[in-house]
Amino acid sequence: MDYSTIHWQSFREGVSIFPIYNSESTVASAALLKYVAGAAVPRHQHTGFEHIFVLEGSQEDERGVYVKGDFIINKPDSNHWVKSANGCVVLAIWEKPVQFL
Image (cartoon, rainbow, N blue to C red; front, side):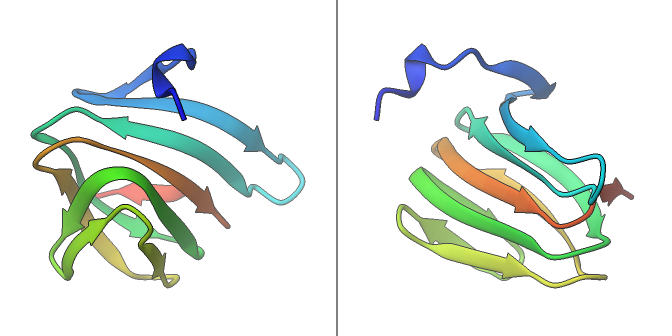
């Protein structure tokens, strides 16, 4: 897929977001996230399940490195930081909002 045609919005330094949906009735949301090489998201707490599917490149947290095709599930009440050494695009689906620590 050509991710350069997507209208990305700024999310964090080096990380862009393309919201797919945000349901006010359930607070669930989904988005594409694009990390430039070296970008990171600080430690955050999950109040519900988070599902991540790596579409391009790789990202990592304290549990490992995830590459294209990997699917990660972060359980409620878990927390982690995320970074991408070489850049990546991921699909993120959140059951509930995250809280940055």
